[in-house]
Length: 85
Image (cartoon, rainbow, N blue to C red; front, top):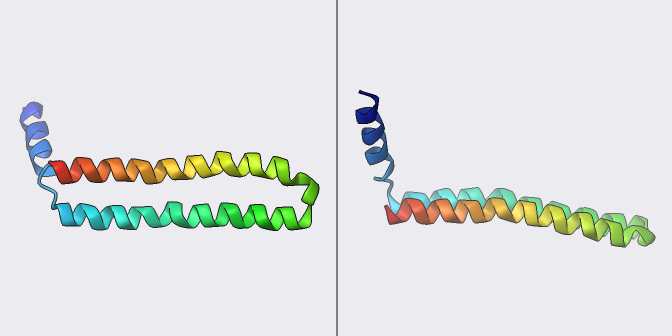
């Protein structure tokens, strides 16, 4: 009985409108965009206050930048999966 429910759920999930998926990805990309802006603003602010800490701040900034961008890439992959189905 649970196999029938899972098949129905998969059929329902595959009928997502591609336009709706594009809007969802656009809204999902807002968060990483704001996050990247906040990361680099903090690096600029920290470097202005402590110029000798620039190397350490840049290492932390690149790490958090990559983690934030992964969220946007996951959203892009989900968009292509939803629009292809």
